[in-house]
Structure formats: structure tokens, C-alpha cells
Amino acid sequence: MGHTGYFDILVAAERKKKAPKYFVTTKEKKAPVSRTHRKCSDCHLIKEMHKFPVSKNAYLGRTYRCYKCTGVVNRERKLRLHPPKPRVLKPKKTHEEKHEEKLAAEARYRDLNRQRLRDNMRTWANIPYNRLWQSLKARIMRHTQSQPYSISKKDIGLFPVEFQSYIEGLWKPGMSWDNYGHRGAISAGWVVRFIRPASQTNWEDYQDYRRVIHYTNLEPAWWVDVSGERRVFSVSNIDISMMPNARIIYNVS
Image 1 (spheres, rainbow, N blue to C red):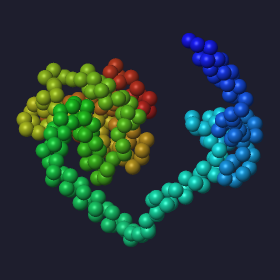
Image 2: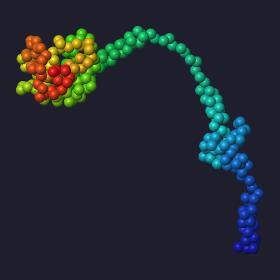
Image 3: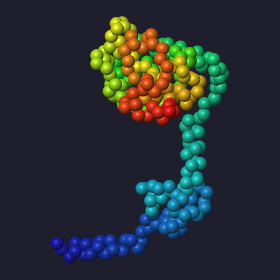
Image 4: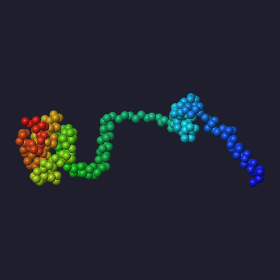
């Protein structure tokens, strides 16, 4: 390497050292007022830095348009690109029309899913405590001639599965879920009867209604023994060993 090449290298290195003093970058030209404040490019107000949207490409990680001006620009762009459509007011339907549409929709669903609903009902009816619940509601409706109060755990005193276990614990020899009910072979069927006769119950009184459907007032019995009997409620009708709460519930002295 000659002396001329060595001299050129020294000159290039010297120029490289002095370059930052003579050239000003773009970021230095657009430098903000400070690192905590910035001037908005739209409203031309000096605001704090946290009032500007975050941007990875902007200087100090914040844009030069504040949040308020950015919202105005975005709303104008949305109206320009997606103009609002004229609103068409539809006539409101009456209550009778809505009810008729609901009934028609239910009828269409039943027609399209007849087999599915039949299978669901058959599966539901095979669960023992569902059969007990439905039978109890049907008996109450026969006495009240109307829809009964909601039968829940609070009224009976037990959860459905517990109520099923309670009835199974009172079964007499020969009773099972296969011969539950009095349809078909009458001599082989059994039902759940009220210990306190329904004829001595004031069904319009909610408290008296709850006393009757409480689990301590229910027991399994053969249908042939229940169908023709006319019982009078007394202490002799209750097995106190199996139903310790009977005296408290019915105020039997």
C-alpha cells in the first residue's frame, strides 16, 4: 500500500468522527418540547405525553396527534367509508301477534322433532324420582282443580334423589319401580299416598298445602288398599318411629 492510500484512509476516518457534528437527523428536527410534553399537530396545543396514543414507529413511542384529535379523525374516516344507511321503522307487533307466532314456532318444532321429543320424554319418565314428582303434581291437581304450587325441595323437605331413597326405604315386600302405579295389573301396583287424608286439607292455604306434601306425610301403599278406603286422620295412622317430625308438622297432641 502506497503513501496515497494510507492518507486516504486517515482522511475517511477523520470525516467519520466529525459527521455527527455537521448532519442533523430527522428525529432531531421534529424533537418535542420536552420528554414529558408534546405539541399536537392538529389542535396545536402542548399536552402531556400520556395524552398521545402509543406508536412503535413514532419518536419516544407516542404519536404527534392527541387522543381527542385522533378520535375526531377516526369518526370522520368511518363516516366517509361507511355512511349510515337510512333507518326504516317497522310496525310494532301486538301481544296477540307475538303469541301466535310463538305458538306456530313451537308447533313447527314439534312436527320436525316428534321422534326426538318422544324419546326424551320416555327417557325422562324412566327416572324414578321424576315419576314420583309428576304423580304427586297430578294428584294435587285433581284435588285443587288447577295448577298446583311449585313442588320443590323446600316444600317436600328432600332433594329428588333423597326423596326416592326415602320412599324405597318404606317399601313393603314385593314393591319395586317395575310395578309402580295402578295402571295395567291393578292388584300388583303401588302408589304413594298421603298419611293425612287429602279430604281434610285446605288446599287454598299454602301452609296447610306444604304440610300435606311434606315427605313425612307420604308413604308407599298398595293401590288395592288405597282405592276404596276412607281414613280419618289420627295418631294411630302415623308410624312415629319412621316419621319423627309428624307431631311437629301437624300439631298432633
